[in-house]
Image 1: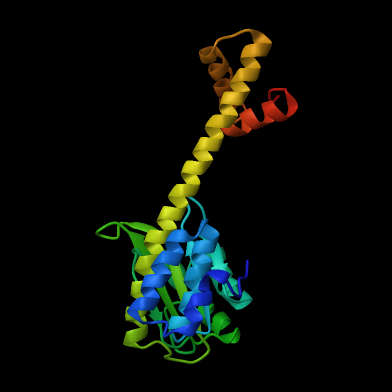
Image 2: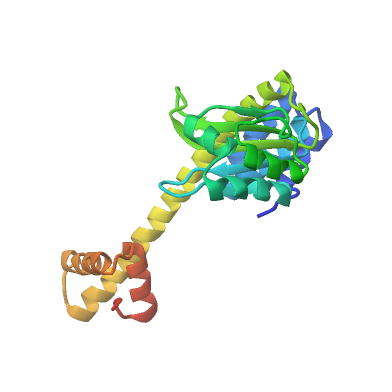
Length: 242
């Protein structure tokens, strides 16, 4: 998806974006963001204001799956990400795997990922800075990666890198917190669904709660379907999956 502007960033356009005050306000905005999507939107829009980049994006790590493209400021970033995700190679993949910042000063001359670099250069991207989003005191858990891009070679200075790392720390905590809140909300919803489905089974088949839960669990295992999905189907159709 492409997000060009976010209302969460309105306050940042009137002040120097790298000031301590701006980062303090960013922390508040990230804390108040109601979802992961709005959290990463705020991060990439702030990156455009605070850093010497033309484009920005955030990818999030997922368990046992490909990285998820969570926010981009321009379609070109989606292309840059897609080339790496499809081949499982590139600075994004390295930053995720090694939890290390990757700087490409010029895609015309960098030889670490030559095929990818050549394609990205054709898209007009010359400089790349990928910063991992990590949590924990030792950065053991990788939440995702923030990517910064410029059409100019050697666009990112040491100051840009320092600011990017500060932004990444704010983003890491905010995204992890937003994900946790969404997970907890989904868990509550799942419990409600399972409870409703159990009530239906208890009334229809005159069984107790333990037996009703066992029936749902068996159908979940037999059909290789999540328990909440079995419950939802029973609620919607009043029938168990085949």
